[in-house]
Amino acid sequence: MKKRYDKELGIEALAAIPDDQIDTSDIPEMGDEFWQNAKLVEPEGTEQVTLRVKKSVLQTFRNTGKGYQTRMNAVLESYARTLQK
Image 1 (cartoon, rainbow, N blue to C red):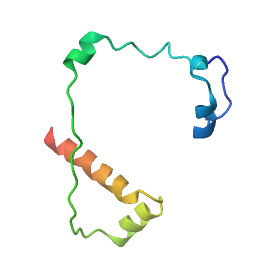
Image 2 (image 1 turned 135 degrees about the vertical axis):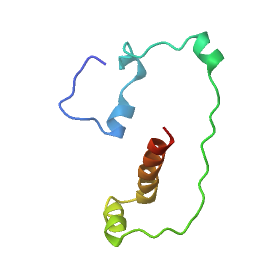
Image 3 (image 1 turned 60 degrees about the horizontal axis):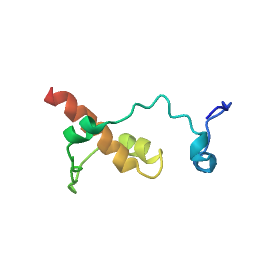
C-alpha cells in the first residue's frame, strides 16, 4: 500500500483496498518449519460465577460499553498471569 493516510482507516475503508495494493513486505514468511512446530491451542472456557465488586468498578467497566465483562475478565487474567511467574 503506497499511499499514506492522515488518519486511521475504518473497517469499511480497509476492506475496500484491493489485496494487490497492500504492502506486506514487513510481514515475515512462515515457512514449513513454522508449521511443523505449530501446536493447536484451544481457548480456555469460562465459568459462570457470582462475584462481588465495588459499584464504582462495575460502573466504570459498564461505561466502556458492550463487552465490558470480557474486558473485566481480561484485566483479571492479566493479573493472574503475574501471580504465576
